[in-house]
Length: 226
Ligand code: ATP
Image (cartoon, rainbow, N blue to C red; front, side, top):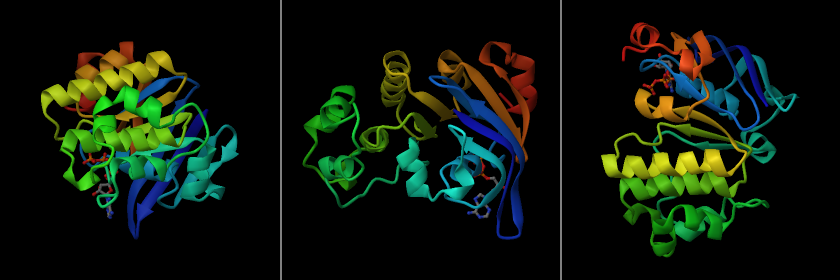
């Protein structure tokens, strides 16, 4: 479904990606791993067409380099960005509706996945807790009816009990839908439990990729530091 090869990208004169390779098949869950600053978010920005890049970047065979970010979203790539980025002055309901595209995911289904969003429909996003804002960011991405959902640090800074709720929702997405998922997260334990495959970045390049079961403690200690 997603095919990335030799991807490069820069911020001005500063090169951030030197050669990222990764593939995600239909219904697959991929963990994109690496220490801080290794290029995970930049890779996601390139996939979602939020930063210029070069190399091979294809979704369903289509060259993403030819597309704008909204066209990439329409093609079926849904992003839950780092830092959530909810529309603070819009209500929960409005945050969800602005993203809506036809498909099985609608308000009812999103609020069934996250009942708190249903209870808080009329509240402004700014008044939600961090965990609720994260649920809203996931719900907003689901409302676009993506075939590939990208979650960039979706449990960052949340209380353990809320983190568990988010992981449980991701596990449901995996088991109950055929959605492909790309996950970036600091918890190796949680990533190991849910991901089919992993890709590890170091200084903007892919240095390891393979089935999650083959990611041994010595590899993760050496390449990720955990
Ligand atoms: P983290 O886990 O800390 O979010 P990451 O693996 O997602 O890290 P990136 O955020 O993709 O890493 O950063 C890759 C490199 O690009 C780093 O050297 C970072 O300093 C640099 N970088 C990221 N964003 C910018 C920016 N807006 N302008 C300039 N350099 C940037």
